Length: 237
Length: 206
Image (tube, rainbow over all chains, first blue to last red):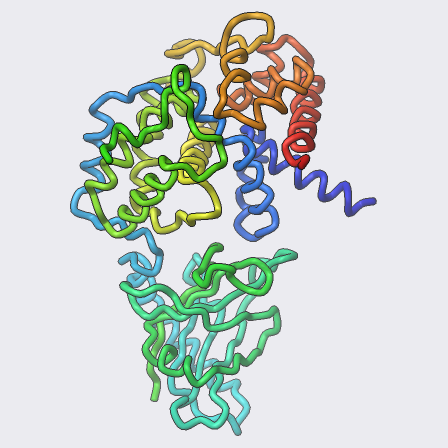
């Protein structure tokens, strides 16, 4: 019973969000929920399918010519690559956080069980406030019998909503799309086994990102949800 | 194909394709978005010409001020240019995706505190949306493009239909609806909620 009224409430909020009657603080809170809740995003998408085609059916109004001039001036000379992994800001943040990476790496290595092969590469991923949040590291993979990357969650993280998964992505560089690395659960220490085919991708990546995706991972093969942690790969061996 | 010929046919005179069929205009807009994602500025100019009058209409109706609508549309088109890669073919029609960006930005705009005195100096008036006069509701229900939505709107009670239309097209909040329709807030909220529930039931029915 409680469950059904909960889902009715979610449906009502999604419908009023799209209609436009969810306002003020309620609207801001709902937008925040949407970031971490793929099922809620789906509900909104369905309401957009129902209502939005009608929004443009009420007649056109020609905008003044100056509007296009203002827009054209804003985009002039800039390629339209809105991919977050291609943006200068992303890599700049990564460079700034490399210092944090080195520091956290020292702490991290100190906590490793001894029999592990030495770490060859590490990415300290940070959250939006540039706080270290997650460490992904791996040993020399080429000759490893059991190639894997290790994932360690360092801090309290946003809750994983029901019906969602966290997915790690390799970032091969500004020109190339992220490559899925694997799913991550809530455990503090985890291991992701690698296919032989992934080894080269891992070695050639500049950075790693964690996004919130529908359960089981992105349906499209590219990140679809918000990126909550990201970091640059640092070679240590 | 010239740009003009690919535009959706005029609603009053022509016969546009049914609303959810991936018609030629959708395919063309999707192609333009894909070209924008690759940094093709002429494609972006074409996308603007094909969509700006529709989206400006959406923004002016919600914000009721031309200058605000210009500011919002400028932000939205710059965003669309930078985030064209985020458009996923198959998840929504291109114009639906762009409309969602514009509507959300308009509604966020209405949230911000305004230094200038808001209220009296609107450029356009709120239309009546009553059933008993030739007006926007009549045009809407007769609109072939509206398809299932128009059919289902017709099945709502008159007050439910009117409150949903005022909220959707003119961005009225619950309290603005209550003032405009001269009804208690709770009553108006119930109209909106029940109306949306019935719309969903009707539109999702096979």
